[in-house]
Length: 298
Image (cartoon, rainbow, N blue to C red; front, top):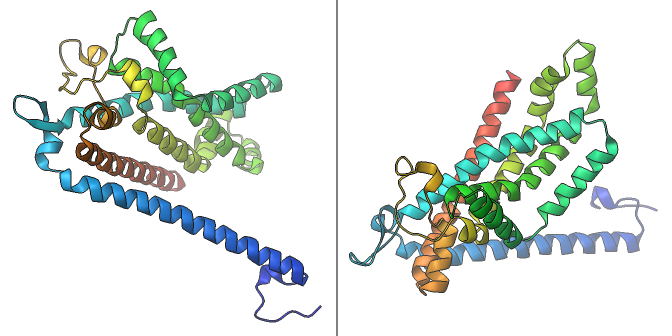
């Protein structure tokens, strides 16, 4: 069968029917991608259109006060950054370390498969169940009360399966020849993992970190049950410090403005701040990953 020089390379040699099917599926794929991008851009554009006019320096740098008539979200921004930092400091070493052990050290195949199945199951559990467990375990049993620390520990449990699975898949994607070459040169297992395997899997680890941050920033049910809904400034360095501080994060503040007080303009302004904060964290994570990768290559 003769083919024209203008025929796409991937459809050459195919029958007319199969070529038509291929082109139709390709058109459907492009159409689906275009619809998805349009929906995302439309959603972001609508949030910016509704929220940007309500943003002001006073709104970002003050706290809510009935007496002064102000609606500031500085405490919510402060609490959100605190929850993100505490959660990542705990979950990243646990998640990456667990993935390294399961991939590089564990020898019991059945136990490894059971743990992988458990992490996949935990990753799909609704967040409200984590909220109830966190309230019972950290707030009541551990006597932490309704605090940001209890909320952060609950988020650690919730995001740990995501970190483990993404890191594990990245480690498995590293070619076995790299490990064999390092072993042939006399490198120990930990030295090989630290200098070869982990740098090669760094992109996947950063991706897992970004997914975890996205889930932390967007979570509200867990924090309502475990961290509280206070909109006042917290003193993290006195009067109980990090352990006894409680308050609402940006997502909880958005819920309060939209569902409790019906201040939709303020809710959209909080949504704009969430979008910007998520974007900045993702860009920072990618930049840190690229910098670490370049440092390892040198």
